[in-house]
Length: 275
Ligand SMILES: NC(=O)c1ccc[n+]([C@@H]2O[C@H](COP(=O)([O-])OP(=O)(O)OC[C@H]3O[C@@H](n4cnc5c(N)ncnc54)[C@H](O)[C@@H]3O)[C@@H](O)[C@H]2O)c1
Image (tube, rainbow, N blue to C red; front, side):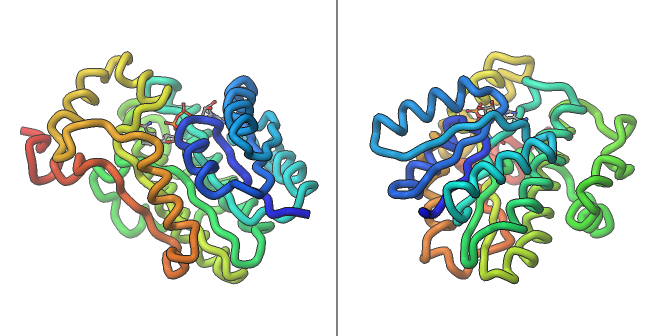
């Protein structure tokens, strides 16, 4: 039996991270769109990686449990990467909350129950959550600790309190951060660690949908006026993930890493500051 790397979300960011840590291990890939899983599995197999693919919809606990069950047939899950998600231009409010918020929370909970001793995980949040105003200690605690099946009943997540799909996405990503803090305390009982990474604009199919969507100009302006002056690439996100998931990251758990070319800094104190 080998160590298993469980990857949800067969996109560019997920693949880049899996390539950094997955060589010599079994990489089990779950995606709602099996064609995406097939595509990265082909690229990785042809580059010497050992992959298996399964259809999995992270907005369903049953589907997540099925994927975990399949993965465990190959060995213990020692590494977990969640890079599945939908963006504000790809889905309506309800779907964003069900996938990005609830789905991530269920994954962190269920993988946490089976993660190998001293294992580790990362989930991809977003810079978008960092731009949103602070929600206060009470709501933060609700997002962190509410039982997963009751999360979507929280008042802050009701339709009348959500302006648009971008706001829903920001709430989901803020919740990811808080959930990681909560779960790190549970994962830690097994010496396991879990963190989130909040990327800025990273060139992937998801970002290209944003560039071509109703907020295209907003996003192009954002990377142009950020200190880095360009979008990032998935390999730069993988640099951070590699650190977090290696022995060098042994003291890092329950936190979020912002990697956005300075866009958030500029939004508060630079050229991107709203008038
Ligand atoms: N690309 C960016 O600019 C950017 C910035 C910040 C955060 N992110 C986050 O990074 C993560 C990965 O996105 P990416 O940019 O690599 O996009 P991507 O489009 O390359 O990959 C996303 C993958 O998630 C899968 N997916 C969507 N809904 C799913 C579901 N319900 N169950 C299982 N799989 C599902 C898609 O089929 C796709 O294969 C997302 O959570 C996204 O919010 C991306």
